[in-house]
Length: 382
Image (cartoon, rainbow, N blue to C red; front, side, top):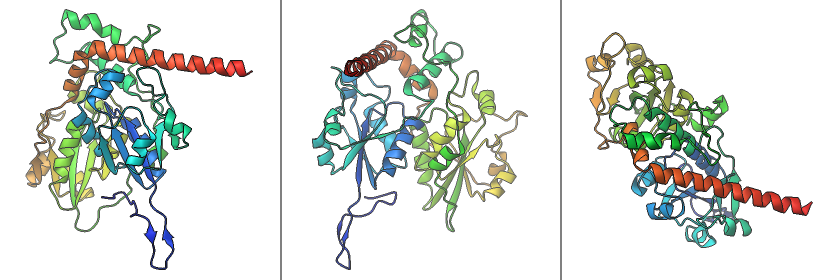
């Protein structure tokens, strides 16, 4: 099935002229802990052609080359499929990108960010397609990386995740998470991402509600946008024939009030891009009020308000933030079937702490060795 405006296959037109076939683009990766940097890479790749296929590696392949992933392959497949610029996913894609893979999926070229990806033995995973001239590069999103986000989460765990027992074994390893090869922390716990109006425009659909659309409002932190959020939004999307989902994102200070110290992990600008990248969301309200008011419902002509099965914390004055939609009988609880929360993500990382630490340090050491080797080659030329 072709989506996102991709054209059909090439062939003679009515006048006999050949119709250019759609350009098929390939991306691949682990896509573990998907963030808006991954989404931005896929957005750029999709803009280079007409149809984007994303290959996602298996747990076994990732464990072999990098160490165990935080999310299972099934979770990662679903997370990538939920990104609105992805037309198709290829489960179980090989870790090394070959011409055979591109030809199998009838792709013209592959796209990757301007960072180095290496196999377990230190080889460039894109060497073959680069040599064949079937490789394109896109810009890496500054200010975010999986390592950075993990760092922010691990800094959080030191004080206030109430459902995590801070035992001696945990304390023994906590500080080691933040240490790179040179023994210093690669993050500060504060996002270095700088939002621009252009970035929001690139991520936004720009589509207004159409006659006959069911306008559904959901609200929350949507922090560290993950598969639990995707499951919820997918279920909400299925509630109407023509859904137009508006997601209200609370300001950082509001999230901190009801979630606790050091939340949110992502700031409001990062959370905005994360939610806008989801195919089920049509519009985002940046800095939505915590209470779903009559003014908000009337302004957006909301016909249904949905909330998941998580606890609803009262507003500052102790009132129910969903009092107005309940009064109008337009409030509905939606069970996503997923129990994944930010807390559980953190627990997964703690469980895999030693493997994760070793994986990142090994990756940084490999990349440093490759860069030094490239520099030596350049110096020898001169």
